[in-house]
Length: 262
Image (cartoon, rainbow, N blue to C red; front, side, top):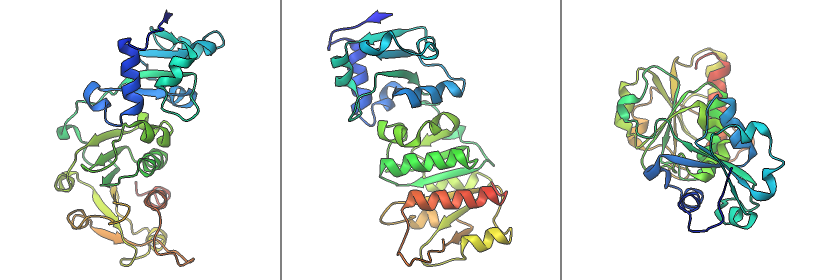
C-alpha cells in the first residue's frame, strides 16, 4: 500500500483531470472508475485495473476482492479523496484502468455485428443509458459520430453502469462509414414509417441489424437517414409528440432482441 498525502502528486493530479475533464481520457487512454459498482463491474468482466485508490477511512475495511484486484494500491486522506471525486457525494474507492481499444481506428470496426450508431447525441446521461441498453439487448458495438457526448467521460460511465466493459466503442465515426458494415440499418421517426410493434409481430425486422439514434432536438441527420433501409415509428397512445432518445433506443433494441433479429 502506498500512502499519498500531497495534492501535487502526479497521480492525484491525473485523477483530478480524469474525474473532472470529460475528454481527458483521449490524451491518456485511461479512465477513473469511481465507486464500488463500476469497479465490481470491471472485475466481473475478468478485467484488471492498473491501480486501486482508496480513501484512508475505507482502507482497513475494504473488501479483499477490491484490494487484491490490482498490484498497486494507493491510499489518500479522506479530504484529498473528496477533492478528486467527481461525485456529489464522494465514494471511498476507485480504479484507474486503461481503455483497451483507445488507439483503435475505424479499420477495427467489425462487420456484420449488431451495432448502434449515435448521431450527435449530446446529453451524457442519454448516451450512457443507450450504452446500458445496448449491452442488455445484445448489441456489441457502438459507433459515435463527432458531436456525440464523449463515450468514456465520467458522466457517461456512471450512466452506463458498467456496460462499457462489454462493448466495442468507437468515436469519430461518420455516417459514410456505415454503408460497408454488412448490416441493415434502421432509423426512427416520430411521424412516418411503419409502427415498430407491427414489424416485430410479423417478424419483418431485418437481421443482423443496426440502429441509428439521433440528436435530442434535431433527430437523425439527413445523411444518416439516407443509409437506413427502414424508418420506423414507436406507437404512443398517450399522444406525446416524441420520446426521449434513450427511452426510444431501449424500446427499439428490445424489439429487435425479442424478435430474434439482433
